[in-house]
Structure formats: C-alpha cells, structure tokens
Length: 193
Ligand SMILES: Nc1nc2c(ncn2[C@@H]2O[C@H](COP(=O)(O)OP(=O)(O)OP(=O)(O)O)[C@@H](O)[C@H]2O)c(=O)[nH]1
Image 1 (cartoon, protein in one colour):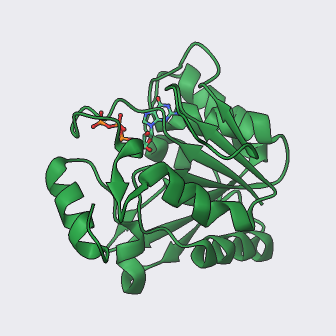
Image 2 (cartoon, rainbow, N blue to C red; image 1 turned 120 degrees about the vertical axis):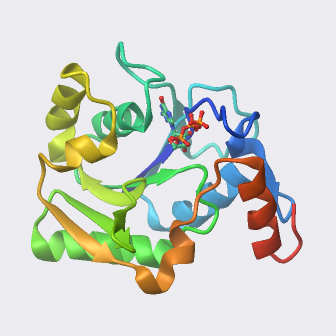
C-alpha cells in the first residue's frame, strides 16, 4: 500500500501550522510519518508548506492543478495521481492517534470486497481523512473538483465505498483543529506537548 499524508491546509482555527505542533516532544507530522512508513511502499506528503527534517524516503509535493490549496480533496487527488496504481492510505496530518494496524485492516477489506474505498464510520459519522482509496477513482475525484465541489463527502457518493465501523476505536479517529483540541491531545499522551 502507498500512503498519502495531507498537510497542505491553512490551520486557520489553530492559528499555526498544525503539522509542526509537538506531542510528547514529537512533531505531529513525524508521528504520522513514523506510523505509516513501516506499512508503506511509498509515502507521499502533500504539503504546500516548507517542511524541514523529513525522512528522505518521503516524497514531498505541493498540490497539483489549478485547485491547489482548496481543501483535502485536492491533496487526495494529487496523491492518487502520483501514486499511479493500487491502494492508497490517506491520512490527515492532524490525526495524532491513527493506527497502522487499522490501516492494514482497511486495505484487507478493500481487497476482499473489491471496493473503491474503505472509510471508517463512528457514531454515524464517516471519517474520510483516515481511509483507503484506490487510484482508479482519481478521474472521478478530478471531475468532482471540476464540478466545483470541494468536500470529500460529495465525492464519496460517486464511488463504491465499504464503511468500516469503529465505534469501539473512536479515539483513533480523533483530530485536532483548535488550541483546545491540542490541549486535550496533550493530556491523552504520556508526556504532554
Ligand atoms: N494537500 C492539501 N491538504 C489540505 C488542504 N486543505 C486541508 N488539507 C489537509 O486536510 C486535513 C484537514 O484539514 P482541515 O482541518 O479541514 O483544514 P485546515 O486548512 O488544515 O484547517 P482550518 O484552516 O482550520 O480549516 C489537514 O491534514 C490539512 O492539512 C489542501 O488544500 N491541500
């Protein structure tokens, strides 16, 4: 499996680049790369920002196309295009507690059910920014962007999706948008920030 890490957002609600904030002394982006590298034949980091000290095996790119910076769906399309073939784990850089074992589970389900995507669902809400997508949907994603739609949810209705229930592991899907979220995330780790 390949991995696409989305880190090209503006972090307006946080007021600073979320991917560089530290938990347990480790930048969020490094936590995510560290979790994904062992299960990935290739890691594509779609960032739009200057990032230092990223492992050399990670491919760092900006969003491709005229839609650069217009949301996570643009980053997904960029990653799927560069990945070329096969299953791709998509991960947002603001999800500190993602699990490589669960990601591998998504991939297994994709193979078994022969679907375009496996997306976790918890308490009735889907979490499309920690999910596995097949590269074969990239033209549909581009068409969604051309149609003026930017939400990942709007693309999901056009593809074959298997939803993966995660009510018991909801913490894995937790994401950080605000300073309050960051304080809470720090409490959930051993040594805080
Ligand atoms: N490549 C890429 N990633 C993006 C883009 N917009 C958001 N992301 C990433 O998608 C994930 C979810 O982003 P959001 O929290 O919705 O948006 P954000 O811009 O980071 O934050 P806000 O400005 O507070 O909405 C994060 O990992 C972002 O870095 C984009 O235009 N391109």
